[in-house]
Length: 269
Length: 306
Image (cartoon, rainbow over all chains, first blue to last red; front, side):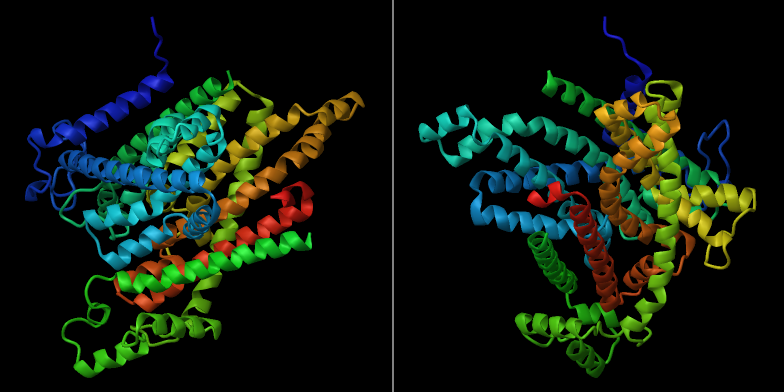
């Protein structure tokens, strides 16, 4: 029988809940934009666990719609970054030479923009909106995958089975996809897990700054932003979305840590 | 050493050039006509032509880049579209505030991380270790745009210890610096822990203990001293996260630094200012990283090989 200790059960439950709400939330009877004038700034109570915001909209409904936003954005960004980054990184590691040199330099240049500064600048220039956030965050996100994929490719490109494949005249494309990718996919998955956490934060951060999702669409970042204006009278408006965001990020980080430990052990043994 | 220095500086120069290229092209990412976006639809034809000429947008792309570079070399970042002030003057007003904030945040982070990491390494796998690393985990997971409002809620609104926002007096820096420093403290304490754990297994620790040194002396001087070297490198890299995080933190606390300026400029569509801010922040980061690398090369000759 498998034991499920609390440090695995907790994040798994949270993430499962997040995914389910994001995927099936719009089948539930949600009214995130419905205004109840008599309920403006009503704090959490037995009927509405999370209370209402400054326009009298249900925080619970907005939270669940916001889950969908953050889930969609992070999934899109991580998938796009992983595909683009891995492709570029593997190509650089495999080809070597001037192509490798060029790609490493480009990676260095992108890494020279600290944190989410480049995403902020890009989102600021492109203008707000879901598509532009995905573009801005992908431009920043591919670098991590590229660096990792390049290093991994370099470390295994001289293995026997790859030399054998080359000797047999296998095409580059086939070698990369069939012989190298399966061996380097594990660390990329760890990177992707942590990537989801940082993209959830990044989306909320951009939306918090007003550069991301625009009202009235619900996003956890805009909810926190709205909440900061009413902190004295309605602290629940800041606490509820922030706590939700933290729980999701914490869960992803905890799982990522476990995944990394597990892979470390597997690699060592 | 000289060779290492040249190689390192050369690559820093290359990265600087790349950063300038990207910042230059930012202006061309604006959908539609940037001049119209900046001035609004009701602007006069002559005003548009004047701005187009000032930004050099009436020239071919290559010439534009050339002009941009020439101006940069002369430390001319252009003028703000809103206040008409020269951007260099605006920046020199804002940079000291960000510098202050970053230094205090860094100080907080080190003050929290060192004891925390050391303690959890020494009391490995006890409740001390678990709770310290639990704290670190939570610290990494709390985004600063929630941490900030939360701190304001508790320490400004409920307890009334510190001002809500702005920059006035000594107390006003505490909350923004804490907000900015927490995530760094969390990452650093994990680094300190693993670095100390690694060093504790070294033979020189055994020697130090065998020759009867006081345990505290062994830990503080021999273990921590040697564990700090890798931690310092991480610190240099993490300063970037600090600079990036300053944009959000300064916006929350209305801290009059370069980060707040960036967001204000984006909201006012003052794009030359946005470009200048992004350029300055990134180039500072490049400079810090280069200096860290060079310092590291000086301290530890083994790293010069790569």
